[in-house]
Length: 427
Image (cartoon, rainbow, N blue to C red):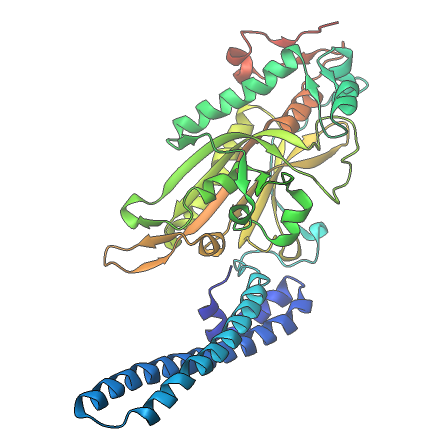
């Protein structure tokens, strides 16, 4: 969430940010927030003065007793103060809760380089890497190829679990693991620290990483439990430092983690489409950084460079997409996606998402850095997908397919596939 002091000191910046994100509907909420915050400060001062008055009267009573004076008038006033204070504090709490809810609706301040646009059609292609192969035969999609090789069973998973799930078999299951192991080794060489996180988090803890809409649309809640399944290990990594203070000498802290992820995908297009592209369950290796504010954009570039290098090693054609203001989630200051080319759709599709959340997530999670001089401030958090295996398997199957229906394994993955050079049929 935003710093309330920023709202107090620069409300015009907040309003401009809302307009640039095409969230003009929140401007009345901002104006009411400012009024409620002013009211809260007045009530707080009133409550503080009333407490001071209570303390003074206590001293006056003690002094009057020592001097043998009549204390009845003072006692009468002393008895009135708790009721008056309770009345003020009730109003104070009500106004504070109202202002806090409004503050949570204010999006992060966007970086100046974020392109302005109302929706994803205005996202900007900033780089294309690699050329799609010219396949001189009838192209098959990943579902057709995987099923003909007997390496996936989407019919069985639809019966056992519903749409959005899958059974992987033989070499395709091994390819999934190869991608995970290769990425873990890749990130280990970058000197990031490996973490295996909880796959469930308390709902209240998880809400520090997500806004209400994102929670409702993506998160699976456990019935009769105050727990939810994670949609990405980013949530667990952030929560690991809940209410922590970290000395600046220890920053940046660079993590990567592997986890199974679960997403409801409410409102998403194609969730009922057969295959691996959009699923409710998937494997992902995530990158996450805690850092000093002055370092966050240098590290943003580093995270992007890591993922580009990984995909280049797989020899898959990709492009980098800068997310525009209207498509940028509220908790992000800047974001870009890597999209991968699919010959079946003759288009690119998202496979990773890079985010600089600046101090927005960390403030809500109460994670601070301690400067050498002892001063405390909210640190910055960044995250980026290293790899989400299901979509990358789609890209490998479709881009590396051969005329005879076989699929060549990318060279860098062969050591993790027991030396196999192609996905072998189980039929």
